[in-house]
Image 1 (spheres, one colour):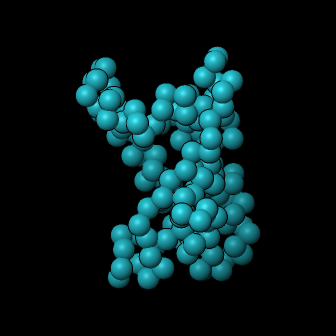
Image 2 (spheres, rainbow, N blue to C red):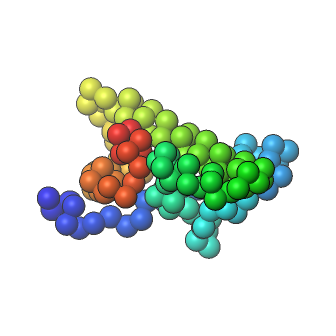
Length: 131
């Protein structure tokens, strides 16, 4: 309970992207995907993954009103969010069975407190929390 009471700062992610994907990068940048960033290009994980929730995803698609560019942006955000979920699953597999070498590597990136906070915070999508 002590870990939860301390709360966790926003969990953020970033990636190397480009508005001219696929020519200059492996994926679109955050601005092209319509995501808010801080001055260093970090995106809150909660914002990136919100469309993994099917109700939010369907609402976003209805809001796009069949506009191809907006629909593509929504689908690309969901694709990137699913990628991050799969990365978290990979980290979990690496740490499975008390693999202390892997745990030591990832502990600096994903603190126990922040992992616990994301699990307990129901504003994150279930797919992310289950990863």
